[in-house]
Length: 501
Image (cartoon, rainbow, N blue to C red; front, side, top):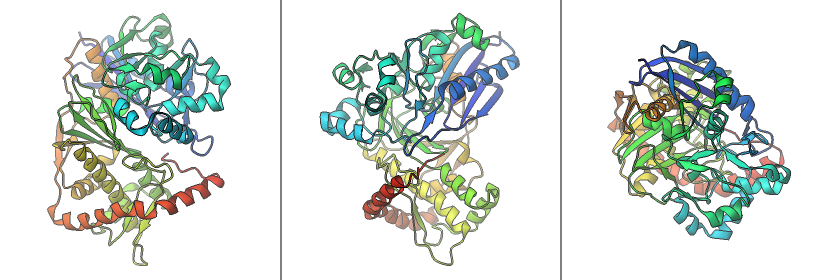
């Protein structure tokens, strides 16, 4: 029997879905673009009905007729961590507050640090409380939207919202729960009851599962709404980047996945819970593993910005101009903090810097400097992983930025490390289909579908120039921090919102 698996991933700017067989063979895929809302400076939101559920329903309706056998499992991943207050039925009470690119809860972050102490938070939660954390955003809701908070009975995220709608089960996976800093203990996979009650008084928190575990089965309502077979298992799912790492085989200590997307994401596998001041530290997607995660605020957003300033000229032409520019962009260095920054500085008021400009520099130099800035950022995160005691043994690169060859080559040249390019890199939805196969009992927990297609090797002849420029890159942020913060304050007064959209 040709059992079919459905995987869907809800991203910041699009939702992607795929149906596969249990051996990873892809039958069909679908995609929907959507808009992200920026209602106020620092606020970034999604409409869960008009984006999350609508996209899932439309993609499912498009893919099901192309299945050549019965659909036997479903898994959904999404942007994380998000904060969606819902009523007792799981229906949204407002738009979802997005992950670390939403910076509304700065006051609440400071209050939590003062209340519990930064060291105690890192020790219990494995990471700092920051704009990625759900705890301060729940506090923000209580303070600023008390009428919503009074009606809030469930805390949902993108994946758990779909699970609830399909199965009626109120759950959350261990990785997403770990981002509910400082309310969750990733070591014990338990809510920290005393802190959780103080931060979110009266809120019943969801049952926590591993991402690949069955959260529930399609109920009659879910079947009626989607056409999916009643009774088939639905995985708990998790944050998109971690699901993708499962599909490309990033599962052994020292394995790292580097994602070239709207933002840059780096995820390194460890075997023990590892508290970190610079990185997010969460359970892994393979049994017995943990993951150190370094997300940034921009990456592909910078190349899109450069393209928009260039009259939306084709990327191929911009890349050609950058290729014609020597490594180091003739002495240009940029800080890619155009939307603030997450890893490793966690500073929402950081700002972009371009230094070294002369009248001789061209558009090609600037475009290459943007690519190199992201490469320096990647190196700083890899350095942080190494500082945490996890030597980087293997890098698998995924995402749209791997196409064309230039960006991956620059990152390898800057870091001095090779990168494997995955043969099947459809994004997290492919990993979701693998999770669905796990839930349906068709594959083992350590099964990997994708294999490397090629390896990008660093050019040793460029190491000296990039080492010198990386030193300058490292000095730029502390040297310009006070000025950047002053400018960020001025921009806030004028209602300017830095975003990575």
